[in-house]
Image 1 (tube, helix red, strand yellow):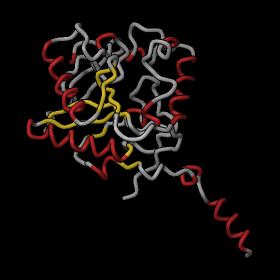
Image 2 (image 1 turned 90 degrees about the horizontal axis):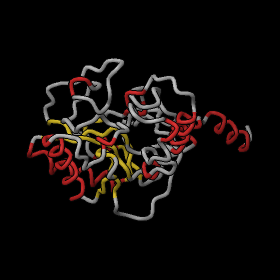
Image 3 (image 1 turned 180 degrees about the vertical axis):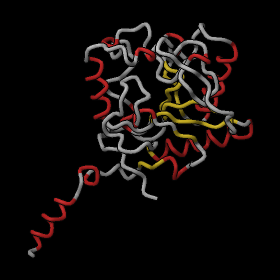
Length: 247
């Protein structure tokens, strides 16, 4: 076999995911801080599109290394008070952002109205709930919440008529502290400083915001769960799939 044939054969055996490698400064969060809980919603169907998004080939949080190390410091600061971070989304391949846009233009079938009870899905991009250019695709944004260090179990018992901004017992099951809404809830109650939530819920959001801001993360005012790491060089967006973590 000639050298050219060997190279050609190797290329044929390489899968698309293997051919595309994450940037060298990206890491799996489990390799940096395994104690942070992970509930990667876009790798499954419990999200506003109702299906796994392309590029999420594994339910793993991947971040730029400086952002991951900053999260590790946040986790350490929360531990003495009995709290832990739980991440819902981290690096987001750009193909997933495009899939969100396609979903927003598709006919309404009511299947995921839980996440946008008072909104028209066609307006979610224009209203700023979903961005066509996401910092998630640069590995510096993270969606997350707080959970007790020893969760008592999931709360919530959603029905077909439930709303993401309804009472805790009527939302979808989650181990999070009560933040006033579910994750990815497109409602004014999700605004970080919304006046439509209670004192305890405000306190939980402020505990998260204070810990995150102390270590370089900035909150998006319309979403209590969304934070972007402000340190480091100018970010570049990527479209590399999230492959299963190699142990």
